[in-house]
Length: 102
Image (cartoon, rainbow, N blue to C red):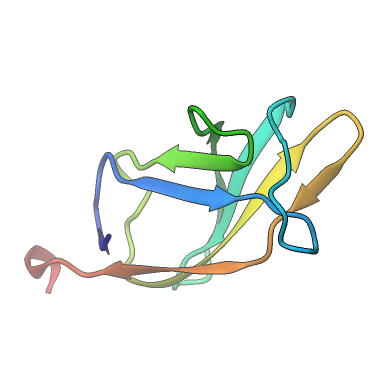
């Protein structure tokens, strides 16, 4: 699914796996975040939730202003459990410009 600059209501999801690429049960986690670096170099994070009916995937639903720059974004999941705190591998989220902004 394409993600466009200014999208509202788009789901961004990250599966959390161990180093062997096996899904991790993160259902007991107390913090879910998706960290990002946008194409302009701005660093931040979105507060995520555990995806319904899963135990290994976090998600964020975009809101007004959360996707405001087209280009390649770097994203990384972050989860905090009582016995483990960690991050996923870094992924790339490609945001496409819309005609209104050209």
